[in-house]
Image (cartoon, rainbow, N blue to C red; front, top):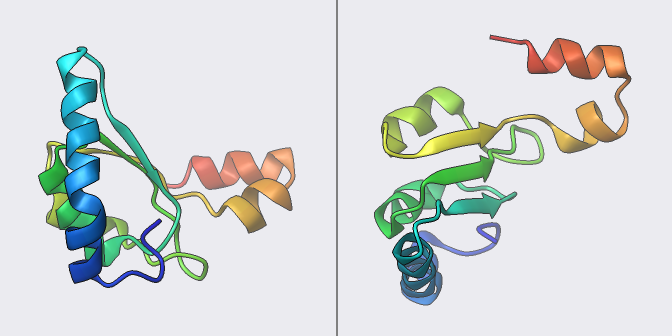
Length: 106
């Protein structure tokens, strides 16, 4: 969702609705797992402020823009980060051995 939208547009157009969804999810005792497989670094703080619990897919370069170290500093300890696997080159085109090697990287 984040690809192609400026942070201001994302804040103005999407954040109010994301926040309402998160509040509804939390009212029912559930965890909000927010899926965004785009370039999310510019909007990470917006998503954090919406109250999400889990953020995925954390698409690495070249398809995405996620820098895990910078993202963790930006988003803090309140949001679980899930993903950071290149879905195309690792998962779709990979072998079981190359996938296992990738997911075990520190």
